[in-house]
Image (tube, rainbow, N blue to C red; front, side):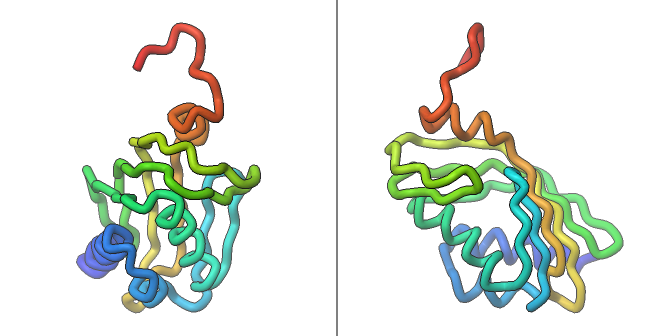
Length: 145
């Protein structure tokens, strides 16, 4: 149980340090990743690039973990992503040019750790909230900040 928590914490530390080599080293070669927008990736290069795309687009990107739950080789982290959108973000719907807006979005990532490496990741976040905060989608009628 401690191994999954430790590796999940290492991932967040590497992400917050914007350390591409460390992010890459935490994944198994055959890591599988699923994320919003029907994103499905396999392999360390692809999963590291996904994280780095966010870091490049949000040069002050930071994950703040609020809760971690571990069990049977899995770690679940509830987090807030914070950053300012200063460069193009490539995603499943295409490229989003820099909006220079601050983003604060909640998410959950679920990681399976095997032999000290990340084997499986499932990332969940509200795409509509992200696009609304970036000014790409209008806020819902009657929505409050």
